[in-house]
Image (cartoon, rainbow, N blue to C red):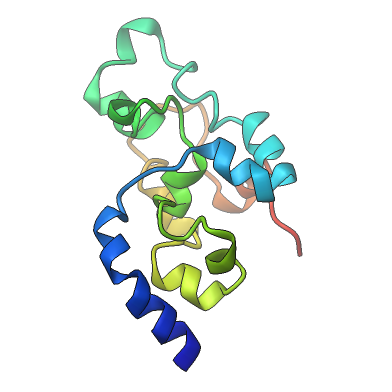
Length: 140
């Protein structure tokens, strides 16, 4: 715990940049299987699933391409796990407590519910447990 706090204190100046995205390619370097699951899954193609006329509509883009203003199409790793500028470094990721302390998010049902609501257009009601299996990219 003391070591983690020391590292966190050393990183405080970098926390100002915590909103910075590093891109899914950065995640791929250490998490290739997770990257492949994402790349082949629905989130990577979320923007493409919209009709062309809806891609710039903020009501649609806020979920289908929330970081489009930063040059990121679709729903990236960082959309769900938080901007990685601070936590993406290998030495940070090896310390789960530190990674979470500086911005790594462990998304859950509440994270998904930010976009997958009863009012979003869909042919079926969003079932968190069932849909989670479609994006499974972690070991356990």
